[in-house]
Image 1 (tube, rainbow, N blue to C red):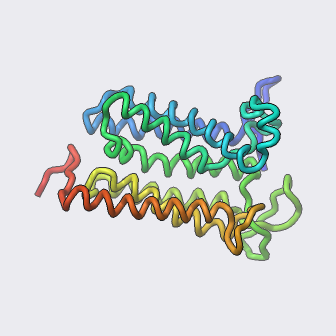
Image 2: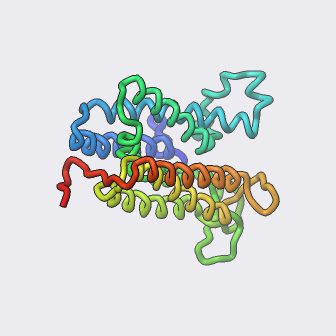
Length: 261
């Protein structure tokens, strides 16, 4: 793998960090276009993306230490901000999602914006950003799959010499498809919040499935710890989807760029 892209003296560009930067720029650009089209301020996308990413990184690290290394965290809480030889090491996506969602919610509440409308704008680019960052995981050689004799298997030299599923690439491809679907759905949604809730359901289905191929340390019966979290996400997403649909009472939302027929 290629965990480091460029090294110039003491300056190092890590693959994962570089892909995160690309994801942030893509999100600012894409969400900014949707925000302007919906009549929001130009700075909305940049402020919310940067705030959510920073809170998400803290949440991802905190979740990792709570689950895997809480003793070390209690002794030295500053380990949360430690950067290892390959950049930031040890993160959990669900922690990132919760941390980012909390910051997102506080921002829209303070600005008195519609949570559902803004969440709909963000959701396609959340899927796109995830797809890009998983490419960074592939280059870094983390988040790899189970051992396989399938032709799809490949060797991750920093792990061992065995063939494993490149689950990072599977994840990236599936989330690119989810991005395309959510972007298509945006102008066709029946109610505000449908795109965001569709993201929760789409991500949940993807993640539950990919966990069968991805290497995991912890299992609960036949399921991985990630599948347990994902089952909860799917349940919450399904309940909210039904609740929001009933709340809107059949009213069809028409985006600003689309005329009602």
